[in-house]
Image (cartoon, rainbow, N blue to C red; front, top):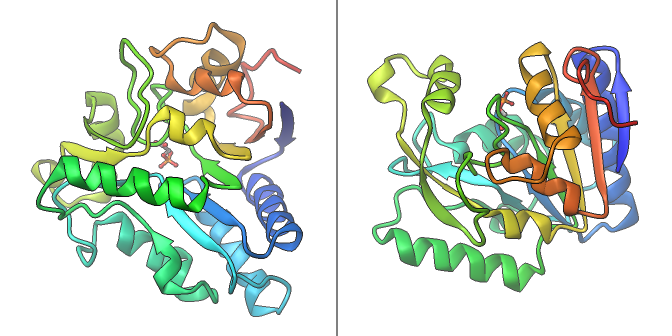
Length: 244
Ligand code: PGA
């Protein structure tokens, strides 16, 4: 595992964008596993800037996102489809037909999970998977539980996650209770994992994930089993991390 300790959010975003850019240069037809949330927004901004300046070319890449709210259609303003369009897809030369997310409006949830797993299999999994981390140690929407999940599945979001997501919605009752997410096994198949963490409210989760035991009570701890994890965090988020 490699750890980059950056001063602040901007430093974290810069480092993360450099790693994303290096992945694209190394393998232009790579599969990028992408994440939503506040944490990667700065990285997406910098990557978009890199494209505008002619430094980055996304034209041969494909993307797979970790998760999507169940019940929200791709054009719903709160959907992760929309988030990705706004923060990255519309700003770079990714081919829209090769940008994949679970379909929150799919009529048959089991079939949708199978479809997404088949897609991940067909793509061979991400070359680089970007992750944020929840305050409860979740990655994607893999919430703390009694067992690590395997493939794409539907989850009931925990109270901690609902509270964290609340800031994006006008009313509490609008926050979706369920989501589709890649499973831990899907995530561990990535060639490399780029975990981003910013802010003091992530410090405990980062500490438990990498200094504690591998346990499904802290889903991110599964990353200890992955041979190529790059943790990029700011000082506040890495404040409690003991691992060097
Ligand atoms: P955040 O979410 O980037 O909005 O903090 C991260 C996560 O919950 O995985």
